[in-house]
Image 1 (cartoon, each protein chain N blue to C red):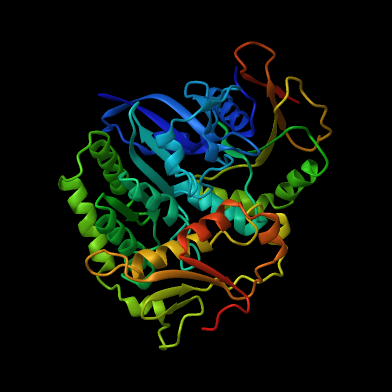
Image 2 (image 1 turned 90 degrees about the horizontal axis):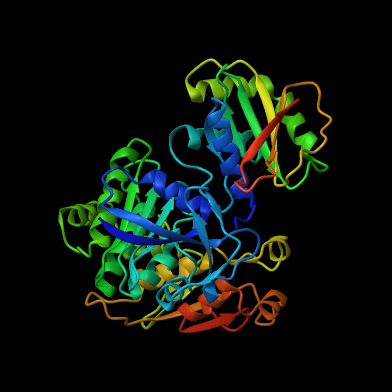
Length: 147
Length: 314
């Protein structure tokens, strides 16, 4: 039986995103190399410089939007503020990530992936927000709830 | 194609490693086990977790690693250990943090441990540029000396951002060589030549003295001993917030100093290695509370003697 760890959720959410047509350009797995080469290195440097931390996943949508995903055990206190900080810095993020990615990107959208089998109630209404949670089946796949 | 078993530090490391290998790899990964699955780990005692490569996750159950794995992770787990059923074939460390004065020795012990056990080892290390300088010279010289002392390939494969595609190919070929127990071929010789190139500007004095000829704060040389002086202070929140206290950069510095300065030209150890915690008393609370914390423990293991505040003058 698989153990649901932060790494597993990040990996499965990335797989789901690729299935949905997103291009995952950054993953921050625990105990892994945060930096790297190319786009990964540049994104890591940019996020560390701007926020002193990196999101768990950054992906580009088929419509050329930037999706920032955070992963946690629950949608606890502090997480809405985390997204708010990205939102407040959206112009800078769009400009810098477009430059790093090498294409003009449109807007920032957000997602949250949870380690549980149910979709948490999330009160964020001012932007598109994806929620990824564990499907209650034996394959332990992630599904998405788009509000 | 040879079947291998991978012992990775974490699931991130195995995923990175698979992405890093090129299509030229000549081995098949049969099984994967990881040392760190979440919070807390016990790999020093051999606890590993099976990893499902298809589903990209660890299993709930745990296994006990064979002794040949336990032995080489005692100075911290390398990112990747490649083995077969009989023993370790190669250990690999990959890092994309640019090599700097502050992190130069951080990953040295785990690779030297492999060398000491007769295991070929590779550190895949990103660098800022191809200029020859002290940092790259100390780093590459340490692995050249390790290769000579332990008589097994110890490779520092350094690369810039631009050199990454080529370095990646070289890494795959080196792993192929070691998996097939080839310790001397063109790829290995070329890697050594590259290390010799960077280490050509090495001088012992550059380790001991600053550019202005002053003693470096952290090291002294005497006729029969080298003294490494961790300058770490008792203040600092890290002692309470970090599991490793504020010790983590120092085991590497101690081991690097030993390899570079305690062995003679015939690769025999002819100087003792002393560690002197100049600012921390022997009964410093953290030392008393965590006498077996891994970084503190290995400093004591690396050193012929350890002294504390007020116990030595130098």
